[in-house]
Image (cartoon, rainbow, N blue to C red; front, side, top):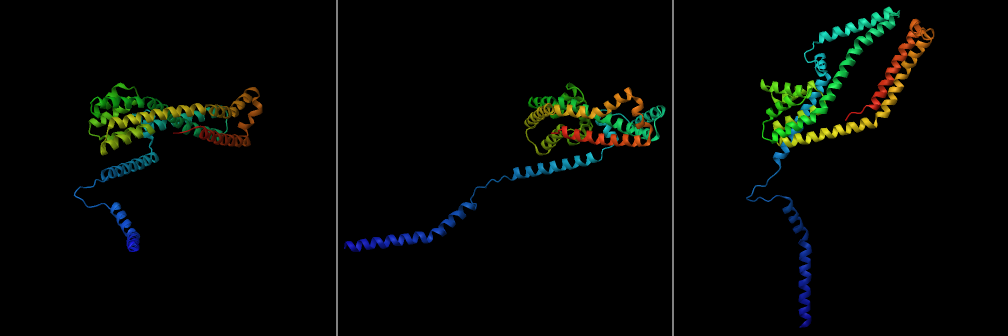
Length: 322
């Protein structure tokens, strides 16, 4: 009897084990499929469709803005260059007349001092085309530096105005009235455009054309995205002001670290013309052959070419853009 009971329990145990291991694979597969596939219930499953569409819209908008800005950089007219330098009402014809007059004065000076025709032509070409463009570039850079120094504070004014309950247009008018130029002038032109029906997107694009800096680009992107996609404008502009201050801090750090290299480049670049001037003042007959002889003129042209290339290389090495 005992043997029969033990045999019966053994058979039951073996049968249960065989049944469990034989159907384990099917049941595990069914459980995985049941967990992986969403079950059809009465409740609606929420999916992040809106967030995905918003992200796609923002990416498409950024690509559109970047492509338009790249096209505008490639096709820059002289009127736009004058506007970027601060001469909004200047006529390009006046600029070309001034360039021709400066080139004529340089050629007249070379003829009076008895220089050859090659030296006269090179001086007129260099001074007539190079000097006015360099002056425009210098004025443009100085204006952009003044704008960047006050732009973060202007954005803070907009943030505080929006948080206090004022509309965006009124916040922009406060910046135009309170912040000194050139920031106030640019925001004033933006507000004047908004009064006559220009959209905010077109206004910030016009501002970027007049002040082509990365800070204005960031501001235009934030304002355009907020207008089309919505969101908290004050928080976005507050983050932008923090980014602009971090960029300014990093720029100052880079300037301090590269000051030694810049001083060395200035000394190396000024040595050849300085030594040439000293030799000309001490022994004029020794160096006037470079100006009176044809071979000397060729040597001077080669020196100017190689010195210009060296200065350009050194400038590229010591200038950092962030």
